[in-house]
Image (cartoon, rainbow, N blue to C red; front, top):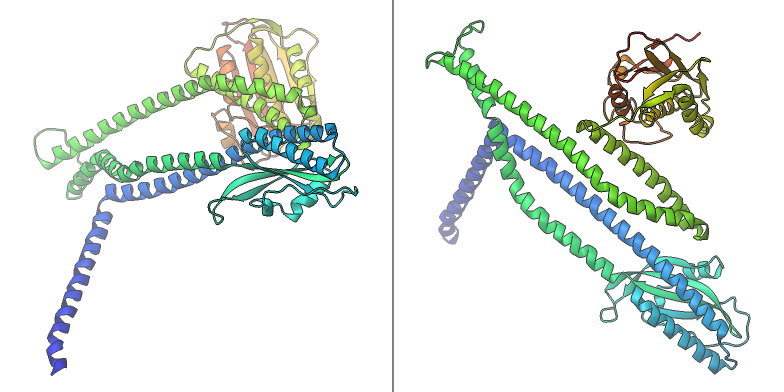
Length: 543
């Protein structure tokens, strides 16, 4: 009887569960159908997903770079401070007049206390003095330790300090006195020092990075809070934007449905209110929308050019400051430790490279703004080419591609802006040396009554016709995986083309795979005059 009484209730429960599952299935089916039937919604979902992945990758990159740069800067500061403290400690120990164990102990304690107080401003939280097993003196003093942090000194660290190679450091986790289970990041720096009458001892300074970690945490929280509105507003904004942009597509789809019922060869003018006039109107609207898009892309292109120009100019001030700081470090690199000396060399190299890249960006922005001016004077190109070749003899020797100049005995002078033409020659010769594959690079110069021409010919990997058609495009590289001797922005040949065009000349290129490449620059001898003769041809077959 009890089972019979519960049976109807069990059936009602099963019926409710079945209805819930059915409604859920219907909802899921409706959602899937909505997504599949709406291109705007589907693209919004896809773009949002891709954007979230990009945002996540960007956030990871920013956080890792922030952590790395902050730690490296703090580490350098800590090591510099520790070096001063170690030097001060050794000076105090050497000046001490203590003779008895108690006097030596008290002198050591006062020195350690003085170091701790003076280094507190740099984040030092503990200073410890441990007797070195290498000490041979019979006079022993009690070790000065901080019981809360002494365990962070590992045997490996002590071995490194006793090696006598100067100050040693390692990243450590410093326990918090109020909560031993909780730690904060820090840096432990140690160095072996000599106590008169007490022998060799190990001096350790513990620096806390808690404040730096707090700043990083605050920045990451701010970034996280900034991303929340983006996550919420991005799907809706993308959907509304796509829905608005795809309006002509929907109109075209409706018009195409009407055309599918009639003769596709019929062309109907926009006249009346029938279906064909609607189709013509829809296609006219589509053409108008395309024109609107072209105007938008032109505006975006102008904005991009303006952005490059503005950013390039804004970067000049900080780059000048970096350059000045680099000069100071570079001039004093011999006094730096070995690791810091290598860092100074890398800084100097990359600063010069950044300065070159910024110069390219500034130059291309001047051409975009049509503000580039010529400062012409009559110059013999033979000597200008010799200057460029001599400046890159080291590069040519390093890659095994010598540069040979073929010049006539008579002058090949023209009215040119020497700075710009020298830059063109530098780009052509360096590119030829890099792609010559150990073969000779031939530079030929000749002149006629109206023109002067320079041809740079290598016999290396060459270029395909497709590469030749794009070789002067901005940021174009024939083989992005190719190992490069030098790096740049990919604007060198684009700027060269603009420089030559500004002189009223031409710059052309040709190549064949496995036979090398050739670049021919032709300039008028008199600025502004037309070129009526060609001193050189672009391509000559190898003999």
